[in-house]
Length: 407
Ligand SMILES: NC(=O)c1ccc[n+]([C@@H]2O[C@H](COP(=O)([O-])OP(=O)(O)OC[C@H]3O[C@@H](n4cnc5c(N)ncnc54)[C@H](O)[C@@H]3O)[C@@H](O)[C@H]2O)c1
Image (cartoon, rainbow, N blue to C red; front, side, top):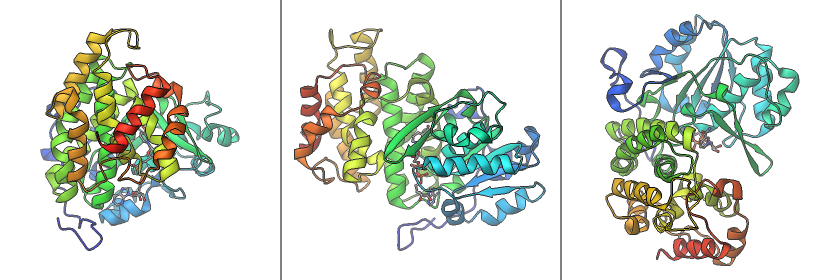
């Protein structure tokens, strides 16, 4: 693979094909409710397995075109009666999601196939949930109603190694500026296609930003109040892949690193599907809204500081019912995956950001120091409640100042 003028990678043929694909368990993907395939060429078989002949195809047109796989995809789907839906933007708006529901209903779709980044997958997941209740399309798309009807099977193929949406039961939809998380177990895709050929076209900057999201999800999941032994296992396996692969997946875009990131992001998705995320994600939303910092990058800018903070859980400020010693053990595990002690986490994440060409502090990223106090006072308390160590407003402000200065 070679990098073009704009940093985009020229796709090459997918070296993992069905015959040689490892069993998911062999690469650390726990057996479970999701069927994993390794090539877009498995799509006809997956459609057959869910009895689909009339799928709604929700695709991120830009991503699929960039991958060079569009002709192959059209051929693979030619026996089916396919309705295409691609009228959505990154960070999809509820109106676009409602249109996807209506398209699925109008087509009388019997499954939804999603090929794209997290935005595309989220549109498809809500469309599958709402397809049999089009009269409630707008309420479902706003997260205000859940249909009692059967929902459609979902086959999801991510094209970014970031959100892990193909593994989760939630979807992010935007109502104006407000992000709404819609959750329903029926939205967890039953089939997943992890095809590295869909990832090779990611420009370096996209690989960097989305890769940071996956890194944050993996590490935060380990110390989350909602973590379980199963989620910690997935999150650990995720971080073991992501930490060494993130930099090469960005700087050289080489296929092995992109594949490791693809699997790592999927495992991180499995982990947060159980545990949810913590303070680094809670803080990221304002950094994105106010200063336009890409989501994954915004997460990474406070990630190491949150880890170091959580390592200081000793007494009453510990929210996790398993107690402070258990929290500290899990933070130590997360830090060891970065190759450092908990105090070294801010520096380790900064070093990683530097390697992938992203600003390493809030200051470098263009945050206005004068906004820090206001940001600290507006963090969503629900999201913060999954962080194992409590913050006072002053403590949160102090942490943001450390992330600003790179202390
Ligand atoms: N459902 C979940 O569990 C979950 C978790 C985290 C985030 N999210 C949501 O996911 C969305 C972000 O998703 P994302 O970070 O994957 O980005 P994205 O889907 O918004 O895509 C960003 C851009 O990258 C392009 N792109 C995607 N894949 C490409 C490829 N292979 N080659 C070239 N270009 C490509 C897209 O066309 C788009 O322009 C947000 O709305 C976020 O809130 C969902």
